[in-house]
Structures are given as C-alpha cells and as structure tokens.
Length: 370
Image (cartoon, rainbow, N blue to C red; front, side, top):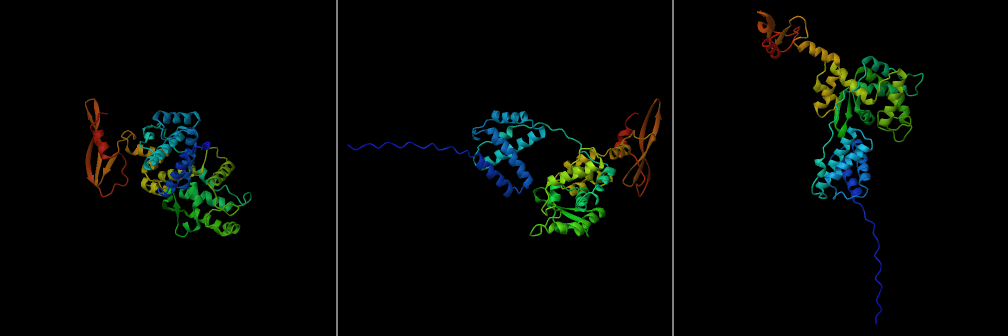
C-alpha cells in the first residue's frame, strides 16, 4: 500500500494593510494631478499619518459614520485646536473621495461629517514705526550677513510675500531696474508684485556685496536669491528664526511671525487708500473674501468711513453728491418734530470737497423723524 504523504502545513501569510499603499498613491495623485505645493502635500501626509495611527489596522472599507465621528473625538482628546481638527476632517474627506474615485469605496461616509464653526480672528499687524525699527535692526557691527538679513526683511514687507515664496525666489525672478519681482505662490501660481525703491536698494546691495561670497561655497552655484551661510537655499524655519532674533533686538513684545509682515503690508496699503482688488492681486488670494479681513484691522479707516457716511457722525448737516448733481440735507421744523429733506440745489462738474453720505442714505434720512 502506498504510503500517504503528509500534507505540508500552510504558512501563515501576514496580512498586508493596503492603507499605506493607498496613502502613498493619494499623495502622488495630489502632486501629479492636482499640482499642489510641497508644503500642502506635507500637511496632507501628516494628517494621514495620524489617521492611520488611529485606524490601528481597521479596514477602511468597513468604517461606519459612528467610527469616523469617534476619530474626530479622538483628535479632540489629543489636544488639537479646532482649526487643526477641521483640517484633519477635510483631509479625510478628500482622501475618501480619492478612494471612491479609484473604486475602493462605494460611498463616501466622510462627507456626512460636520466641522466646528471656527472663530474669525482679526490679523495682528505692526505699526509703521515698529516696522521701520525692525527693518533697521540688522547692523554691520553685530551681524555677519547683515545685508542679506535686511534684504529678507525688506522683501517680506515690501512685497507681502509668504516666507515659503521668499525662499523660492530665484535671482532671475527679481527685476530691480523695473521695480517688480515674480512670486511663486500656492500651487505654483505666479504673480507680479512691485518692489519699493528702498527694498530694491537693499536687495541690490546684498547682491553686490554678499551673495557672490555665499554662492561660491556650493558647486554648482545655486539659483536662489536668498542663500544660507553654507550657500544653500534657506528654509521657512530660518526666516522665522531670523525674524525672532531681530524682533527681540528692537524690543517688540508682540507675537510676530513672517506672516505678520504680510498682514502689515496689506493693512498699511488699505490704510493708504489702496483698492481692495489691487491688494488681493498683490497678495495672491484666490478669493476676495480672504482679503476683506484686512478691512477690519485699520480702525482709522473705519472711523473715516463712519464719519463720511453715517448721518449722525457730524454735528452740522452735511451735503452729499451723486454724479453731477449736488444735494443738500435741509432741516425742516414741523410742530414739535424736526426732520431732514433732500433738496437738489445746483449742478456741478466735480464732487471734490463734498462730504457726507450717499443720496440713498440721505433719502432714508429724509423720511425718518429725528
């Protein structure tokens, strides 16, 4: 009788969690298809790493809306701020949308998750005097590369660019004779931003006196405008630490970051009378709603608007102008009630020197008892 062979024992094959493969493919999709910036992709990677940590091997296909809500609660228990929790929730929604697009998921339950309403904070800005003190902080007596440092501070305030945009500036992007530079914003969107004469002189002095010495250190010579002491491209952390150094030197006790100079740039432009659309273009905002936050920062501008358009901002009765017709608000006494009436008085070819509120508000005032 033939001897029966013993059936070999089956090897235990470790289950491979495909979540890591999906996250890698998702990040490649963001880079190649969506053309997102590296900093944005890095933020997605950090959020997905925390999501995979929470999963602890649970399959993504089997997640329920209750479990996804527990993930949001877990983020809150981890001590994350509401804005960070909102960002993690958006990352999960986009990731699940990608899995649905690839056929991994049939339904995107993450879309059912709500996000906490975030507070809108008024940006912190520096006064023009504090900005001047900060820009004059680099000194030859105490700083080895003081011209480079001054060029960094001048560019941040003169162009309103982000710290990451400043680090990506190349020499060919800066046109000092024409007075503008080309900034590469989020998603590699490009925009032209004017440079003031003072900032142009600071950058030109840095190019002529210090950059060549820094560019000779590595090989081949780097194309970046701002170089570190080793001749390499600077990082955002370097710009942040540099700013903190000079903030401490001039004695400014406010919490200041490179983005504070960007906020100050926009606020000072609006305070000087710049148009909101022009400021939006210089900042590189996709939506003007993002730029409108700066209209709430400058109190002097709001006071001027209130004094010009509110009917009780003046003790006397002003006149208003609309187009080529000049109006006056006339006080009329009627028994015990005093009210105002809009009266056309004359034609004029100019509205210069006219103060007051619009005819629409004036008509409203005319029909209201005072």
